[in-house]
Amino acid sequence: MKYQINLAQVPNGSGSFDLDGVAFDFTWRTLRDGSLVCDIAIDGETIAGGRACVDRSPLLLICPFPSGVGNLYFADKYGNSDPIYSEFNDRFALVYDDAYDFESV
Image (cartoon, rainbow, N blue to C red; front, side):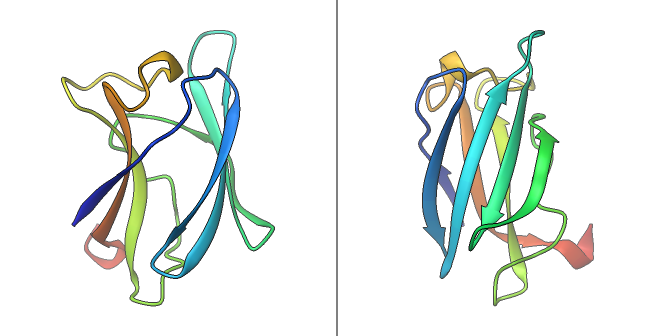
């Protein structure tokens, strides 16, 4: 199942959330060209730093979930553009897909 994680519509921000028993700290930054990058930490350890936020591109390169499946990515609800902070939640969703299988990609 896919779940949307709401983010503040600010150029640089952070949020914390729990997914399948894993506590995430998620931070994003807007670069001068308007593109976004993010850092993802679990239990204070950065597992993804400076990851480009690209439409439907997985943000996690390893699976931290006990189930062995699941990932985070941004999705454009109305097309295939890369996310911009001013349209978080409305047009661009941070998605947790609990069925994303690393082995099948």
